[in-house]
Length: 460
Picture 1 (spheres, rainbow, N blue to C red):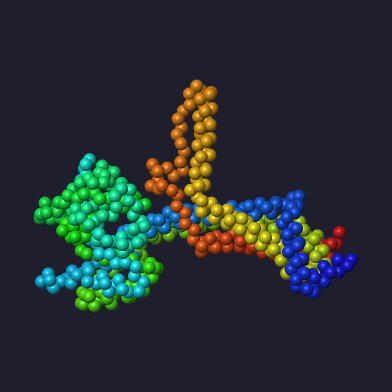
Picture 2: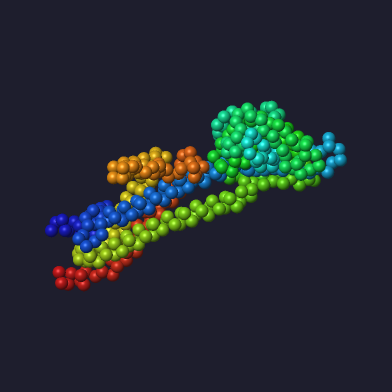
């Protein structure tokens, strides 16, 4: 009787702390103890954990692929801001303004990482075997990697190095070099397409020596790109001069444009200068990647909706099965909100435990994704070899099924599975998993407020 009096006092709000303790105690017993005809709460925990785990790993791998492509494009190809040299109307070539004169003042602006002059054109390259290959040839200064650390990190040289000091030097992508059947030190013939279509195609022929073979991680660049000396590109008619500008923070491109425009207006008074940012230069490609990621997020996020509906049904069933206990709590003086919080606290425990477990496993797998795929491939290959051995015993010969590879280099242009974890997305995934259980429990416990002790305990 004394114990009942203490509980009754806490239920009526005599002490806030025991009130909270009572709710947590009852909710934890409901979660840990399964009734005979009710689904186990652990199934809901596993459902939330599975959804969080799947979404964390999938988005980490997708971020690895997408950010790898985006960074290769920005660091090697498009830069953060591109400035094109205007066509001057000065009659005397010596009076024409050069975009190179604007490099020092732009480089001194706040937020500017590097400024690289470049020229580019399409050319025909003939190597030791097969017909000529079309490639985008970009002329760069020999010391570009000293100024541009981002490009230096993305270009990985299989043989040779970034050596453009000689006028006849050329650097080729690994896939382009393979198609041309050339290696380090071999000589190739380079013909500018723009010059070839002009009046004097012979003046555009150039014999270049391969000084390096690189990989960028982007198949298009490795197959169709080459780098030559900036002066050589001008000799071959490499088009107008560009400035490739890298920012310390690429998201501040609008602010950087506001600082660069006055400098260009002072260097080229009365002449419009074309500027473009990485958002405009790669709008279609980046938009496609964003849509792909959003749709993947929605599709995998449907797991939380399914699990939330299951928790909702399980909680409603629990409310109906525990009507006698609810009536007893109400008879002892518990209010509608206190009894409802018991079931909401159930959802809190399920969501917190399931989302935490799934997030911990997801982050563990995402940070060791290559090792996980290696173990998976080893397990599948072990089964395949076992089947080969069994077939050899039963049939007298074992068929060669080959080794299994999830990301085979013959199909995918990757050497390892990339993974990139973004903290904001991790928090959002955890929040989705947690709220799906909490909201389901809140809506399912709505019947508690309509339970009357007299109706429940009339025949008890």
